[in-house]
Length: 182
Image (cartoon, rainbow, N blue to C red):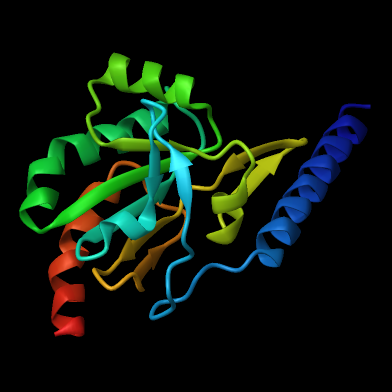
């Protein structure tokens, strides 16, 4: 009986993993060199933030699953810690999840975050960047990041990002990407 139960559990997990893989394969990530998909989304204070308003700056656009979750908090703290270094490189940080602007407000207040977190509850931007994930009917953003150059083109793409190293990897990529566009 235990063997049958274990077999059934493994079968369910394999089926669930294949559904996630099919969903991920059906989305297309913007490619390096491609114009970054434009957007306007509300930030944690409710103000609309447009990608186009950052022309002339480097943009680190990172997608994350859930406010106040352990991995997302680690990732956000890394970006907050390194924010002065990003600013010195003429770069801004924009975090995007499907959480509400109110949830972002709480996350920023609790964790001392000063960069912009954008709310995408309709999944439009998350989908445009090939970063919609989830399981069991719950849609969340997959942990992907994009470096967008000052002309609005994708300079670097990271998928399945490690929250502990996301900020340092993005920071290190900016000088390399700058050389590529010069």
